[in-house]
Length: 79
Image (cartoon, rainbow, N blue to C red; front, side, top):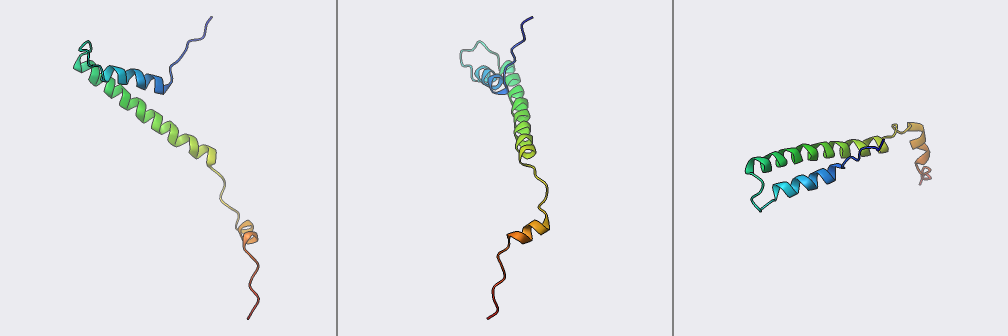
C-alpha cells in the first residue's frame, strides 16, 4: 500500500495564507477567520518545535571546575 504524503507546517501555512489573502470573493470572511486561527495555531506549534530543537542539540553538562582551572594562564612572577 502507498504511504500517505503529509504536508509540512510551512506548506500548510502557505495554503492557509492563500485562503486568508483571497480577494476574489469566493471565500467568506468566516472561512478567512478560520484560516487565520489555524495559521496561528501552526505558527505556535512551529515556534515550540524550533524552541525545543536547539536546546536539546546544544545542551551540555556543566563544566568541571578542575578543567576550568587548567585553562587559566600561569601566575605572574612576583615583582
